[in-house]
Amino acid sequence: MIRRLLLFILWLPCGSGWAQGLGTAPGLTPLGAEQAGNAAGTIPAWTGGITEPPASYREGYHETDPFPDDRPLFQINAANAGQYAEYLTPGQRALLERYPDTWYMNVYQSRRSASFPEYVYDAVVENDRSARVVLEGSGGVENARVSSPFPRPESGVEVVWNHNLRFRGLRVSRIEGVAALTRRGRYTPVLSRQDWAFPYSVPHPMPFTERYPNVLLAIKSKVIQPSLLSGDGTLVFETIDQTRDPRKVWIYPRALRRVLRSPLFGYEIPASNSDGLRTVDDFGLYNGPPDRFDWKLLGKKEIYIPYNAYRLHGPRVDHEDIVRTGHINPEHARYELHRVWVVEGALRSESRHIYGRRVFFVDEDSWQIAVADSYDRDGELWRINEAHAINYYTVPVLWSTLEVYHDLTAGRVLINGLDNSHRPYDFRTSADAREFSPNALIYYLR
Image 1 (tube, rainbow, N blue to C red):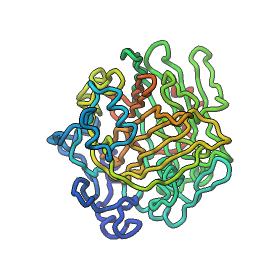
Image 2: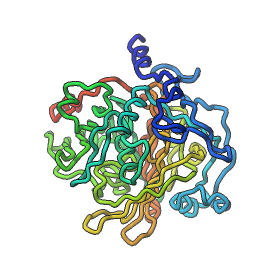
Image 3: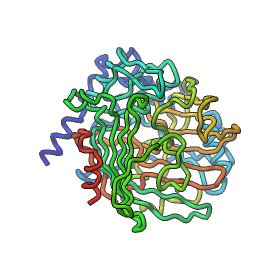
Image 4: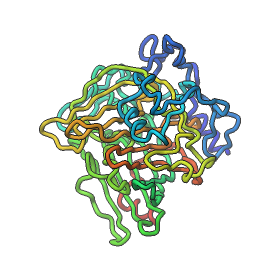
């Protein structure tokens, strides 16, 4: 109990700093979003987000819904999508057309629940003064720490880096469930135990972070289900500037009983356990170097995005009640009107990728990509990916609880993040990446 209390005190924002001018500029939140609501009143002002757990939350359990009495304001479906076209992405409209009888979007009251620890707000202010993009090779960012480096972005690549370097805590353990559905809706769930560390997010320099300032995050993962894959492991060491220090990946196939270095793991390579329905750089809706695309900042707009998805989180519903043929169960999804940054990436002529164009819709309050529309090399809309986010208010941090990857051409869907009936995310304060090594992976797999 004492440890939990200390963690809560460490993470809890004081709640007044942003109101005292901690924001990056007048009228902006500490992360660079517009503090005011919209003129129509359909988007509220940001007043600090969720700063403490609701009364229904029990320590050590999944986050409970802080808005249990909210009901849908209206529903968007294939028949009335034209009325709301200006607030939908092309991919969202295509998804409604693809599944006219089974898919719809329940729209709820917009709640700007995103909040972060006070030291994250302090770091973003410092980043605003000093951060810059390194353009050579795969690129990177200099003079930034903890969270998104560009609260007032002037280019598309700066928004991409804001997403890649967004704050997600310091250390978290979780169980992730993955379901790759066939066209007929059949699937075999794959469960993995994961341990994440984010050295980049450490608020105060430590010997490790000073020696290795280029380390963004480290992940070790072990498959625990099904039995055919159980025991397989993966270790990923993610860096910021991958020109001088590329991403490092090791795999442990149970059949070989040894750790092997993977020579290339990124970009358009099909992701493990995805049945080819997402690329490695689709994870989190985007990750890794932005060097294969030319990024253009298209400005801001208001769209309906997945948000406050507490109904998809935790044991209140079983994963079988979430998974549906071609999409998730729309009854459990929550959409809200939010402002997003729109960024378009066009594949460079000298680069290789299965996508010819990507368009990201990035939540202004968290810098998380909420919706990603991906086009093939012929310019046809191919995939629409969505991140259903919640505020893990015990940290606090806004992060996805479920990521859904729709393949419109194949008529299939991949669902990442099914945590129902499994232990909740365990956020901790350690972030020492020295605990993530090939030897550490072997110990982790025991």
